Length: 448
Image (cartoon, rainbow, N blue to C red; front, side):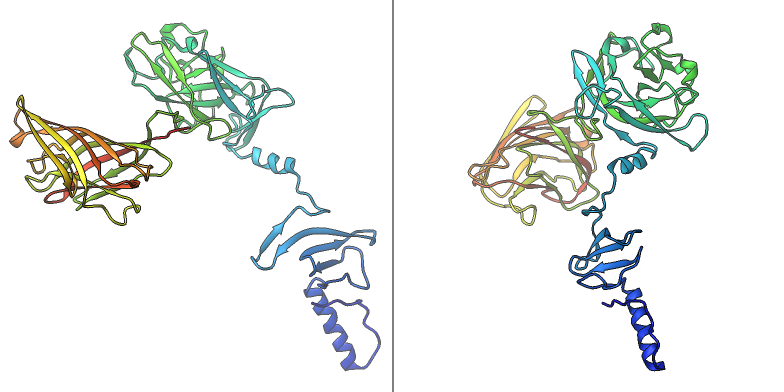
């Protein structure tokens, strides 16, 4: 810490040199000190060690302007907003808005089959409450263009009925087809419109013949893109487009569409289906590759779980598939007190197997090695309740010995006779490794 009046007085050589060194020390330390320098100059810096704020003298030399506060413990800038300095939010937003892909103040609502794009706060878009979307220019490649949306945009389910949106034939489409919501401007970067598309990775729009609109006839409604509003498709083809969100939709056998909302994740738009109470939400996939066992964590925010088994196979003939519970996040797996009733049906006959105090739960008796694998699902209940048992039901199937026409069908009800939570499970075969197959984990929340 050093301060100086920056006046080198006439004196002997040693004294002058000392005075110059003191002045240089003041310069390199930004005139640091707990109190302001006794002699001050316009535009002079002063690091106030009592507050750790760097200040600069104003042009009139009658006040200090605080620039920023430093955190000397964490070695970082602690605050850019002090009594005298405020970083403008409008300036920050203006810079962000010029980044292609930026979406601001845009949300989605769905009511009575009408999808509405409105303000991020749920209010209508207007001149005083606009949305912003930045795309690349259609006129000059690489130039960002900021589009200001000042009115709500709507799409009605009936508008897209009989439009296949890129599907090849007029057939029913599985539930939860994901469609992208895009913003597209015309050839002169004006009059932006929103479109939906089955293509989730588009950078430019397709040919005009592959763009549909509400006023189109069914004959030319096989387009990959479909506009919210009636447009001249020729002025919107081959143009830059920006994905601003996702919706999901379902088409029935009569080519009638049902639009379904997604949860908010990006300025009012979602990236995955909203998990309502009672819905299964995908969590994770575990794929086996000659593993001694497969351990699956059960996140605590879910009350019940479903595990789908897809082709689970052993590398040793005669290995049965078992399951164990953990209550310490998979550090250990319990080997006592499992209770189950197990029924296997093959060739019209049923055999039963039960246990009142087993070391693990028998999921399926698999008498084939490197076969087609075990398929089915397991549901776990009450996993989050430390005062009760965890319960399990399972139903699975696999091919019989040597690939005969018989299918083994297994039904199971089980629990562990100990009051504790279950936060992980382990799959293993009684002999050999888990050669292959996938486990898909889904969870159910008690509340959204």
